[in-house]
Length: 458
Image (tube, rainbow, N blue to C red):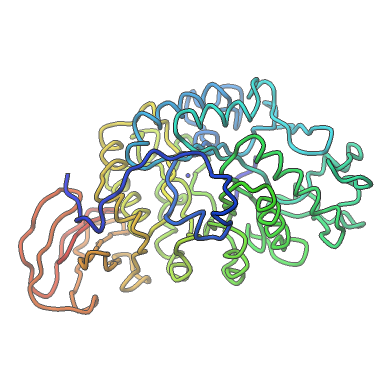
């Protein structure tokens, strides 16, 4: 695929409640509203960061070859044993599950993506069943649009839709869509189009999947205009999954256009606000490409996040040290920002090889509780390289995070008046688990380049 333009509790009100997650319910009485599918930002693991990296040894069969059954089993086992007790419960397989090693895609007799036998010899249902047996939920991926191969390489009947075929699903001019123009735009004025989406949703539901990432979605993915407007297709997937009577979380990607947020809210449970966090280099990410973009890109989205649908900052890669491509200070800032802004926390690292700092960052219950309370922090001033972000917590305390996005150490100050109070307040350093005493009118600290200081104030 081309690069796509990853201790001390706050108190009972914030404590992270850990339960063993079950596979998605099929009880229709629960309903299919947004509030039933994403009551809190989801937590889990995703394959794309390791697929996309050129780190030595990760992709021995060529670009994007990491994704296969054996590797997913290893990560599933590691997440179940190391991260599931802290709330991480999704195992999401990204692009390529239906591609061979040369990235040629395969389709079944109904024009639907079919698992590649070399990557997944026992198929995707077997893979979902394995994930569920570990007490986790299974996620799968598809790009938006109708794959060119099921039009250019034949005419495939649509399953359970007599008289419908893949040639019926697109516009006569074969206009392309998605962020890579790799598919034809589906014409939903033809009833056969919904039936085709129904057939894919039914297949994923029958396999047992609980999560679907739909990629290259527009308006967004650096594309605009009628042929890249995929709102009808996302709505069709929501309708199709509702018909299956299975609760499936729909996540849309990437750089989604905020002007259509009300449509995204109706049909999906999360929306990627930016390009990929991965650097497509010899590490998983770098600070400049593109972790640091999020601080200034997120503010307009915050008001739209809540139970049922959350802004998505992309994969969290803070667990593998050298392979992450970040300094320790950058890893702290990365984890802190994702957590306090209520972004989903899905790890892109090799969970079998978490280092000590990675374990500390990913399993701090107090920080995870800040994320799961679903109260996104907001900036005092987003237009600075030394921003202060804050949120009022459910227990009445405040989360205050000082960041230094610049390349030199800087003194960063948080003023209590910016949060609506003054006087002397108790301050605790969350990551250090250290009480810093009562501070009058505010708090300041000298922060290393790309570093952070995470505080609880009360």
